[in-house]
Figure 1 (cartoon, rainbow, N blue to C red):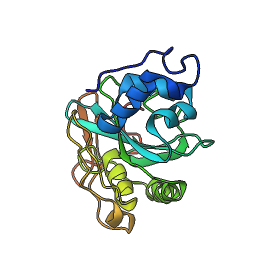
Figure 2: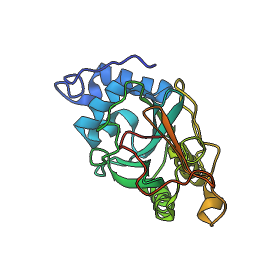
Figure 3: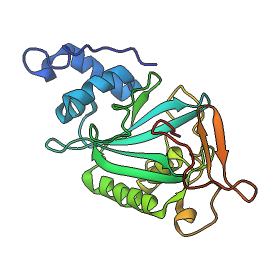
Length: 231
């Protein structure tokens, strides 16, 4: 995991931030190795200018954290040009369905890692020169996936499936950041499902307990879940 470099006071030193050696060091490390979760949280709290200062403008950032011991949950964040706020797209289970929220402001999303911090969070740049037009294309597909109300399946049809599908459409490809668990579901691009094709059954994991749906074990609309049941 990348060594953290910042304290809250370091982000905006006296004088121009661009001239501060620590900011230059952090920028170089981010472009080479990604950034640790604690530094990312500090940058998020300081707003869009801090994102742009460290990540650069028009970049696509992927965030991962571990869930249920073996899997990973993925988010996408777009850091736009100056004057535009960073936005996040995130997927999550709700009533057995795969839902997608966003794009919306990083701090506004109830499913943002900023609201639900994870020690194992990993952050890395997966695309540069990723302008607003490409992000809008991703946003349209994200809304289509949400409106389709596909089955959520912790193993095969989850947030990694959403991020992989969005990354494929954006021609960046799915990037697995170093460390962490398995990117379950990342091999399942959702194009066939969006066209009405066959889906995997619902399968959720919460607190070490699994809930499945199929011919033998139907899932009701009141299946137990929580906002922390990710994947």
